[in-house]
Amino acid sequence: MTRRGAITLGGLAAVCAATAADSGRPPAFTAADIGALPGVLLPPAPHTVMTALDVPPGRDALRAYTMLSRLTRAAPAGTQVSLAIGASWFDKAGLAGVRPSALAPMPAFQGDVLDAGLVHGDVFLQVSAATAEPARHAADAWTRAVPGVRVRWQKRGFRPGGHVSGGRALARNLFGFVEGHGNPSFQEDPSPADVVRVPAGAGEPAWAVGGTYQVVRVIRFATRLWDADPLPVQERVMGRRRDGAWLDGTAPTGRPAFADDPDGRITPLDAHTRRANPGTPGVPAPRMLRRGYAYHEGPDAQGMLFVAFQGDMERGFAGVQRRLAGQTLDRYTLTIGGGYYFLPDPSHGEPHEFRSDDA
Image (cartoon, rainbow, N blue to C red; front, side):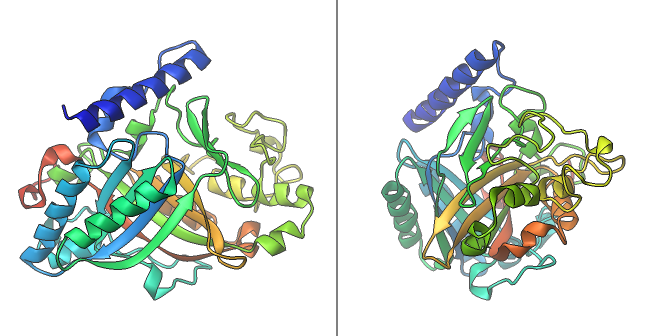
């Protein structure tokens, strides 16, 4: 094991120990899980740099990804790094036949106004750290080191009030609400590792088993409009109290009795959280690990860098996003960028070793 790997595993072991102490039982998520998906399963660092890259076609596409992969595996201690691949990379590399089945350019969902300069990318690099500068320096250095690579778009984010509670990574978004209570917990089943990994037998190429689909959304917030509304209105739009508790008094990590509120008198039917997970028969509960970062580039250019990891796009982001169409929160938000990517399990080797047979 490398020194960096030992530091990373040691950090996760400490987190697991702390969350186990809170609950009085061992965590379901262990340090051994981290090796499969670097930059995903650790609680997120306070600062991040997200860089979507375009690469040259043909063998140069393979070479660029391979060089980036090797550079990021030697990342400085204290950084969290992930390197994912977009659908266009497989086309450029001549590997369309082994592309994961749900990997495609991110579509425009209802209400989106996507900026062509802020979507997609052949490769997606995310570097996170305790402070902003190490993440930015690492991302920029690796990008400059690989011939032919061009930055398509880049965003910097931060997690206000980020901390771990009950085995869940929480933070407060720029609307003032705590995010993350709905995530899988390190202490419970299914663990984050179970939720994010592509399982065997799902019809995916064999090399994709154990990897994860990564969704990125650049969401602009109308903070002035939001701040003009009183807190009770904001809470009914979200479907939760500002601290994460449900409107019917249920604890943040519990499930409200929506069946006892069929008309939405307590939690409106078009509230964000109720649309996302209504708890009704035939609507599966979401299975994804969400990592929200705030970004602030000016009074009218601020919001959230939403990231979701999942083993099944339909049980994860895609199904949830369709249910959110028409939610009241749409009045205050606008998705302007992002993309769909796939993060391989590095134990499957370099891209030229990807196999096309189904697992």
